[in-house]
Amino acid sequence: MSHTLPRRPLALAAVATLSLGLLSACGSSSHSTSPPSAGSATTGAGSGGKSGGTLTVAMGTAPDSLDPQYGYTTQAVEADAITYTPLLTYTHANGTAGSTIIPGLAQALPTVSSDGLTYTMNLRPNLTFSDGTPVKASDFAYSIERMIKLNWGGDSFITNYVKGASDYAAGKATSISGITTDDSTGKITITLTQPYGAFENVLAFPAAALVPSGTAMKALSAAPPIGDGPYVISHVVPNVSFTLTRNPHWAAQNIPGIPDGHVDSIQVSIQSNNQTEAQQVLSNQTDIFDPGDTLPPALLAQIKSQAANRFKEVSIPQSFYIFFGTTTAPFNNPVARQAVDLAFDRTATQRLSSGFMVPGCYFLPPGIIGHPTSQCPAGDPAQPPSAANVAKAKQMIQQAGLAGTPVTVWSETRSPRQEYMTYYAQLLNQIGFKATLKVIQDAVYFQTIGNEALHPQTGFADWDEDFPNPSDFYLLLDARSIQAQNNENYGDVNDPHIQSELTKLDAVPAAQLSSVASEWQALDEYVTKQAYFLTFGYQQVPIFASTNVDFSSIDFSGNDYMDWSSISLK
Image 1 (cartoon, rainbow, N blue to C red):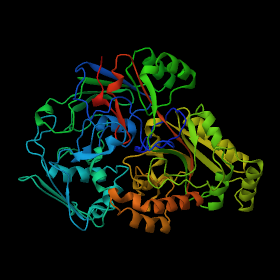
Image 2: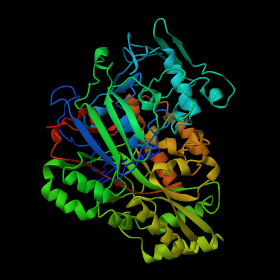
Image 3: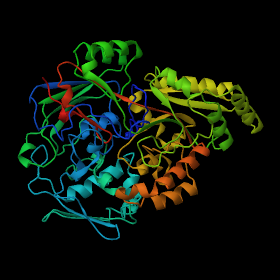
Image 4: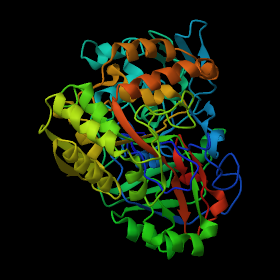
């Protein structure tokens, strides 16, 4: 979930921190492998607490899209996760407990063949979409085809592994041969071309949720498709507001493990000024501050003193980084990338986040298997670079004949992300480039830099975990994930060593990840030395609510972010 978005679509440290979401395109704690509980450790929202009422939520950034087969930011996932139910889903719980895969619309977890290539499930009987239309097994095949046609940012999770999916994506086939369905029995069979240890997590994406066959093959952002989940998205005013109301057909389906939700409706408004957003929650005008936003430093002390019982920071695996376009000058030259890494002051970004960014350099964040613990190649990220290192960086650029090269630095609008990139552009000028800042509105930023034809040179990016597996993060460095639209491999990284390692490591079942932790670590150390990116830190996210909310009811996990269905009002 790059990015925050994906998607998200995160990773953090031992100091209390504020947060930035992943719009990653559409998923962070250096001291903890999982988020501390934001409240109770219950496994779902329907297990107690007051029912009814309207929950109000403020978001500093609009979802990139509320269409499940297109949206990939944390803001999109929070709404889509309780509106569109996939065949498999996650337990509704805090922290690592919220990473447990359970059956969703499938009757049970899949039966997997001994070679790891065939997944077989049966759809639950008598399922209906929110408008009363029966759910069919063939709707799954259609929904996956639609995901690919819409260029969802993570569709390489399907096209890389499902038989016939790449041919369908290329227009060489009219359907995906590796997905067969039987509407009379509800049987669904998926055949892979090679084992993928995280494939059950792929099936749990909201993007893999079922929508009715015949749903338009275009992003329905302003009028999202119907789904089968506890809530229904309605009244969408792009970049302004949207509403979720109860699905009248949901409760009768009695799907175990997926709660009905407490509140009757959820009203979400887009408030681009984080100061105003935080003030509204502090003064109880709004109930929920979006965890993907940054609490303004000017209000932090007041929040901690006056709202300590309704505010806390949590950690989820998340990385904040700068991407480098590896196919165009100057960053197709590894010397240019390494020079920037040598001169970059990660303590500067820490200060810009009011001290709540923990400096780091590795792409795999703390809390994800394979996170390296060795010394960073460019030196201690918690210390400013020496004058000698900055001078050396400038010399490297001059000797490479790159001095004066124009560089466009891409940035989101929101604070402090724009401040991060302002500092970065100044640094590039200091060491010899001719940099200018290009600021893009938050709601379309990741879609813009994900346009493959643009070939952006460098800029801001972040990634929150979609699921607790290093494979999720390496979507961003996998050559197979490069696509025309919604590209998540912003730097177009295509390294044979990375590809050969991913072929081997991606096949390892999730339950056996610890057996290859050292190999993931070695790979992450390799890509860091190649400076395919510049990770500058890991940050925490805020859970902040009004006094109207039962704060102990809030569930938060790295997979689906804040679970609105868990929240009850007092």
